[in-house]
Length: 318
Length: 318
Image (cartoon, rainbow over all chains, first blue to last red; front, side, top):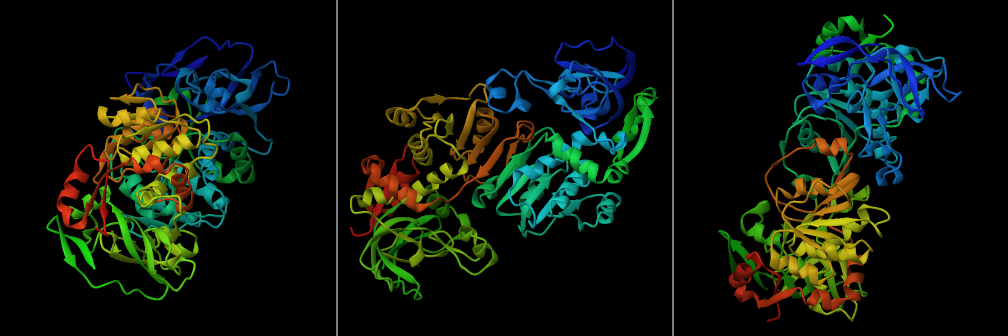
């Protein structure tokens, strides 16, 4: 297969053998694959991953022992767990210490014509959902995890810190749950998108009003948590989505005094994410700014790394 | 009344008018009052509080319109809320923005012969519980809050970071709930107390085993959270009890990747705390190292500030 790898931080298109997985895994012919911030970090050395990156995809099952999957259009959960260790048996397979992660750790990913994943990781895409919408299932699942963090979300006062892609999906989830958030961001042109979605936006630091039941920190910035802690009310919840690296100085005493819950959240449930996408595929299709062939990988990553990027996709059939 | 105040960081015994509170408050004749780390911080300027400190007490109701309280021995919740604001009406009176806090904010405290508190804050002490045990109700309530943070605590693997008084009470609560914790501390002589309680102890940093369902951070030290994050398992809970000040650099990315819940916890429920104390008053009585009259305040604070301090009490009838 034709595939992308990073060498010294630069994307390079190479030829690799077709995936030939064990019996409980399916081979998927990739249609579209999205470039995520994590891919940009992998290019810079994150996870010391040297395989094929890419973990947001939609494709068609070319080979599977499961007749309900063969030939179907699918998206896939990215954590491939062992199923046998104490963590898996305790119901937390996403945290299996022996797991591989598609395009991130120990498993070649979606920036290739074909990939392999366990059959239990795959979800069939409904017919009404285009490839360009379905490719958002993985990031949308991460956003849907927010709704699992607090009971009775409808009617809550919610805020989102950040104005990027994950912030936008998070805001969509909250609005869909009856808790349309206020947005704190830095970039007027990005905030304008939220305003077109009917949401109230703010630039700069908030006052010290501590009024929000739920604050989603999706800024990708070390100062995002501090800002979130100024927004959340006593006994409220901050959902941390930002995976910036390094250690920022954080005054934790307000967390104790105001009895705040700070909940880290990485991945999320695919089924509700697909259901939401099926409700409004046009919203997701409009998030795509570019669709490029793998041969234009350098240009694709350049665009995906720009501050104002919407989603850049690879078309693996081009 | 004879009372203690701080002037330039030093305790001074002064004469003050008797408390003469509004109709829904009771006057309590204080028997014993405990010195807490917060009092030591108040001496150093915390909260810029200039009134009478002290918030751990047991005493007898001298004046109350409530016949079920008059003449009874009581302990008292320290947050006096307005009852009318949105925070109070939402069921979070401990976080009322207009609250006063006994001996900490806007309300004279327990280092005095008499104090005033709203009647609804008072809890009658069972006859079998001595004053020396009952005076631990407030800190024990703070420890009991831990049990409210996770469902199904019995059988969980728990750890406590810290080896001081709050750590010891926290460990007692966890053991009582069927989750005897392992202790990470720094002081051999303090860790020995936990060992006599039948608990396993550790000095120094842990390996990176991330095995504990629940970790209580009660070290009072900025590096306690980092240590707690190395102990907790994916999707586990860290309960933050330490109210150290300042901002420590904390790498939050493991919280996101491992989907950890970090929950701040300050105060707790008095009723279960009193019930636990009634089960084993001797354990609590043995935590007292010194009982001194208010006139020995300087010596009392010196002992309470020493690294190896058990609980130092004022006897307000001496």
